[in-house]
Image 1 (cartoon, helix red, strand yellow):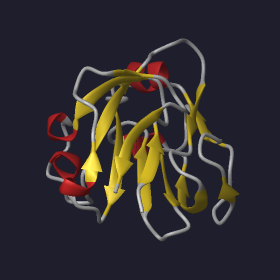
Image 2: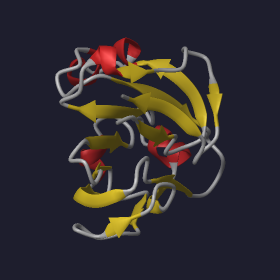
Image 3: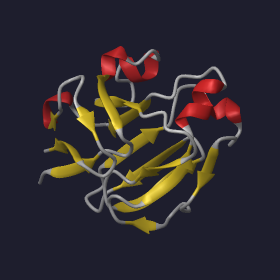
Length: 152
């Protein structure tokens, strides 16, 4: 069964191999892509890419487990754990069932960048296989909540 994955944020698609972090670029957690987010002033929501349970939740990252057990990771920026929650507001709780497109975290990519960190957003099919994903090409502009890829 194919799983549709929504864009958690608005921005431009970047190939996962181009993410300047070896965990993501090396696909150590699984395949996927990244989004260079828009840097609008103020905060914007990061949305659940699939419907399911919030199985892991931190201010800078979350995992949604779909009903069929597949897990999708959204990581808001690189090295952002060091911000200790600054520039992020958690809007859900661990174990909560969410619909695809529901805001899970509110954050400020511009503030993350101003803090000297990269606000790129890796989106990873945890434990998935590259051949099972239908990915858009790098440079594709996406809007938060738009269908982005298929995990089939």
